[in-house]
Length: 334
Ligand code: NAD
Ligand code: WQD
Image (cartoon, rainbow, N blue to C red; front, side, top):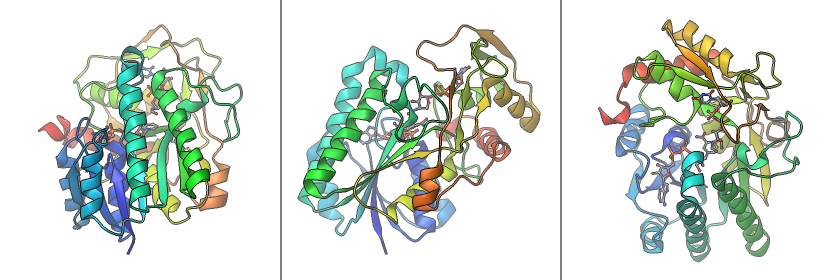
């Protein structure tokens, strides 16, 4: 049986990935300092799968914490590295916090992996590394150019991992996620932000009456209805991409993880209204600084090389978000 260390495994995407790993009989060890998550997500994954996770409340900023985990957990084959800070706006206001946590945390992890001879790592990168893409859909060879410190940390970590791969024969898979959304269809785990930064959790909270209205950030883009278009990927599809990745590790590989299909903000709001049967009031406001009009993935490569493609459509994504929201109005805090 494979044994995988999941950093950030209590978080939104990490918890869904742990679920998929357990369902595929992988032994799961989670390292998370719970700075943006709750132990409840781990308990619920255990409840859904009927399997145990070895959980460590540990901080990647503390090498001794990582060492303790790796001392206790022998035979880890692969690391899936989700742990990071991810709020774009906060990264602009507090860049050092982001460079410190994301970059130093990753370096500490890589040092410990080298010490313990762990040769495989799958890394959570982001479509944010493309910045203002000139043409869409973007493929993996498109120029990079992040527009904020969070995105810079992702690109720098990609570079660090690439250099380590060359120097140390580390197998590295860099997954560039587009816009993760949705939840597991049990309604037991999902995204739990106190204040949502992303569109779908915000729309979800408006539909639930927690917030009065959605602010649509601009309707004057060169898109069919003028609002921003993104490639939303169901978090369970994304989680399954990680399982596909650990089965086929090699020297550095970069894959976009998206669907190739784009939806606009107004389309997302309409779809949410239709599926939740709730009103979703909105107002059109100015563009958000740093936003691009349209960003979608060319996702052929991951299909060709890892055999993975997204299976779930937009309706399923919204149904699952709404189930999670309705059953857990206070998220994991209830
Ligand atoms: P999340 O905040 O829910 O999960 C991240 C987890 O990492 C949290 O549980 C947090 O407590 C943990 N963590 C952070 N710093 C840590 C540290 N120093 N030591 C130990 N644990 C630490 O975020 P998510 O949405 O699940 O994102 C997972 C990864 O995917 C992140 O690397 C993120 O940058 C990347 N990503 C996310 C999105 C998105 O829209 N959600 C898109 C692209 C890439
Ligand atoms: C989607 C669309 C907004 C909120 C971000 C990060 C990226 C990655 C994914 C981590 C855009 C519009 C949004 C709202 C709106 N994260 N919008 N009203 O900006 O594509 O990507 O999350 O790696 O790095 O930048 O996602 O969900 O914020 O926005 O109109 O209240 O919805 O303008 O067109 P984005 P998002």
